[in-house]
Image 1 (cartoon, rainbow, N blue to C red):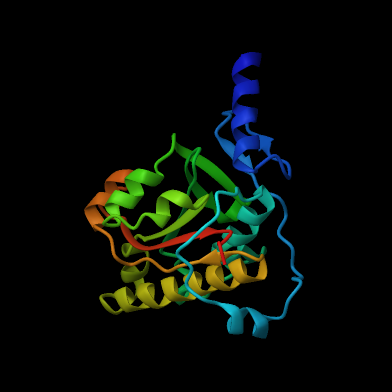
Image 2: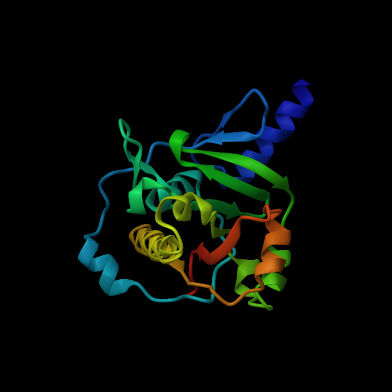
Length: 222
């Protein structure tokens, strides 16, 4: 048991590039993320002005703190009493799920506890590249954030109009990620060209969960 725990800890250290701290759950499949910063080094206006789509990345890992900040910007809880999140959601129905694809595995972000749950071990980046019709930079970046939707969470309240609300929401979340990447000195690119069924297979999604958006994030060559 001790040997297994040591091996898991080493895999976490690889994920965070030997920076930051990760806590191990009893099941050894949960990473409790560092508390996100609420004050950045550059202004919102600067992030908007500097945001560009980047497709060439360095082979340099992200820290766990950077991953934490990006996921918090996507769907992090910003008002604990009511559970409100970083991006607006119609009726607070929160139809989106957020996944992190790294060299170590596939993780699901749990906003309520600001943690990552391991879904699949192993490097899925090449598989995700193939699902995205060969966009090779997905294999190069240390992190790809995949946003998916369970439409029924919103359509149960708003009917078919809820589909539009879900698509509006994924835009809110994606822009948060892109701007947070700039604030961290990173680059990102929006990816919408992919096979839905292939991405569902890579992520192991249920039938009622649909992939909407892939956002590779990393240090750029420029």
